[in-house]
Length: 287
Image (tube, rainbow, N blue to C red):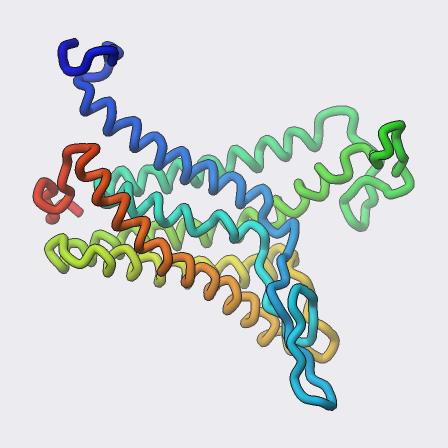
């Protein structure tokens, strides 16, 4: 225990450096899985309207923060999603493709766990009287308590549960396709460039994988879960879905490009902190 005064190692930890490397991996994996759980629960519970465009006698009119003829909106669950790609890229860079894929697989298991808890919570007593048409507690149960807050036997819980169930298939399929695509392309470009051009494998893998994710989650959420807002009367469905895809993808693309700076900074810092150079000390043929 002479490596560092005041730092006692657990018997399972081989050295202070090895313990440090595992803790960094735990932080990255935890941030990834926590963000994933949050986005799946919040999911499509709210759509944030960035702006809309309406046609009129005076020409096109831009409206900020409200729905219109052509609206550009994001599901609230999209907000924490870009951080998951930053985490898997950092894990891929320092810990390799196998560990990155393992984290992605655990994320899938986590999705199933979230759905199971929501299902279990919904069937345990006391289950309120449900509206057979909406699958939600009857609004006639609505009451106002002494604290001034409304209570209708967990209406908010059942609404979140319904939305999560409706979108979980879309998110899981899109998640698997996008994350495995991200990990594969990251290591493909890492091997192709001999470990050079860090910006290429960071941005290239994320840009393509997020396109895969956005297209998949929008199409499946609409056609399978019927959970997207319907288009205004007279608007073509194809244009409506295309706007959702474009808005979500542009948001993810901008964030992906912006995270190049923190990615470079974190890689530089982690090389020193972990005392490991992923380019010179990694066998690229294994990636």
